[in-house]
Length: 92
Image (cartoon, rainbow, N blue to C red):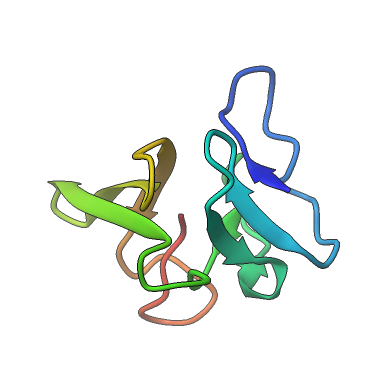
């Protein structure tokens, strides 16, 4: 499964089949379907990455981080502090 851009609509938001989400540009492993959770935004959301270097992120504003593929830098979305199924977990 590729973590894709929003052009044409996000097809993986409600997709919960077992598997690994990879970068749509370089196929670097990003997230496991086991870390995916339901939410109200139009993007798929995850609580953790596959590897420590799966993603990179930098703060765009307080509480909001731009998330990119850790290998090629492809934009993946945003992480919001304290937004998730449990306190302290984030959405990518």
